[in-house]
Image 1 (cartoon, one colour):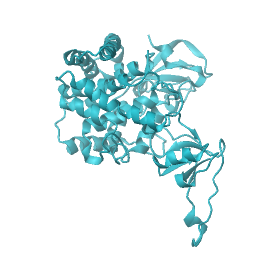
Image 2: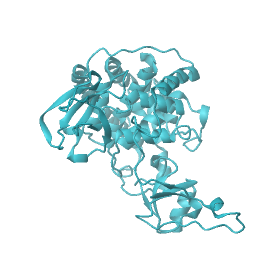
Image 3: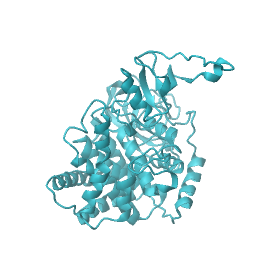
Image 4: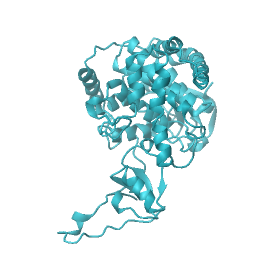
Length: 438
């Protein structure tokens, strides 16, 4: 049972398993803190109002009635919650992610920021586009390496080459976003920096496509995603790979990557103000708790708000030196929980619609007991994606995985239409979806 506890009630020996904000917005890199001293508590006081503790791992909290309180319940400073993880936002989730809400949120997004929308249709099947997307992804990886080398050597950023690289990604994602999105989950990353930059760029473009933004704006989003963390190249070696919590001084230094990134990008003199805005403000949060300026609400642009959502999603679902990835569905649930506090609510809902209730690359279990990887979305029926069935009902690998399009209602051996019953954590049943990338 995890318990909600005000930071003022923390004591040494307690184990903090969750903050009142994303772990990414804190200096605590490991997603869990054993309180060992008053210094740990003071650090949390500067950051949070409340946290969640796990009394099974650490010390418990027993509320003490305040002197003069009318009754004990009025002074209790915690809320007991279920010990299970947050439910993934599937059809049975307690926190609904409804199609009707998504339609309204899409309208709200275009109304809030006043832009005309473009209707995109899939022009290629995911298998067809995957051939092209692999080559583009490979070239993008090589290009990001060259950017890093140029920055290390003090050379100015070549904005024209960045645009050329992004344009090919925009063209592919415009034809069918699922191919590129699948690669973000199934590709083995060389390093966190290389992979994260490319993946954020892909998700930014796909997000913009789902909003109906025209191609020139998709290019700005892609460039912003590719370059938003370029300033981290100038941080001391080893800082980003540190597996323990950062000191306040180290965390302050990490936050300067925004400043460094703007210096790098402005050296080209050819970067759009929209791209600069994404780099400058992707760590700002709706409640003003972000950095570097502490902007809040409408002070944060749509593009920067989109970047904050995508950067957070991609970070917590990707491989990091200090934390294991979580499943795409769990990540969507976290974003849903954080909407309107840290992230723009309408944009969060539209992002969920963009990548689907069962995101491409997700590991899922079917009602037959078989295990599958989601390989493509159905734009109309989000609960019925295309899947690649890789394990049989006994969780043994198939020699030849088979693709099923759930929209066509294929049937199990019991003549029951296939359905997804739950999402699975990466690694369950010994499955790594990347092994099925080819």
